[in-house]
Image (cartoon, rainbow, N blue to C red; front, side):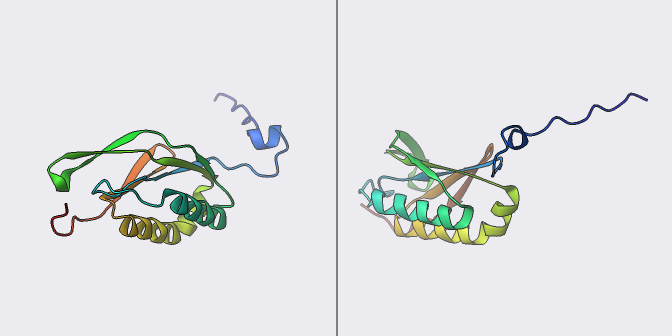
Length: 138
């Protein structure tokens, strides 16, 4: 039987870090609604940072990027956007413990910003909460 090598210490041990977490949560804050009307992105960026700070201890927002989302409820219409990307490092335990509160925030943002979906990433998994199209807009 082969002798098992001792596991190497994690980076937290190596650097004597006060905090060491390895799960990445990423949120996308839209610049417009699904009718291509601008939303108050600064407000929602601050709301998201506040929520992530309270729920997970902190987060960092990055300047707007350029993105596109296909709205299948609008016959595949492509919606171009300039989202702010927010990253938060946390633990799996904290994500599970705060899942309800995080979902509540994401649903509020998606509803109030009139989104077709709110996308977010946990580690390598892209997740999406969808919102039905209500009536014909235009």
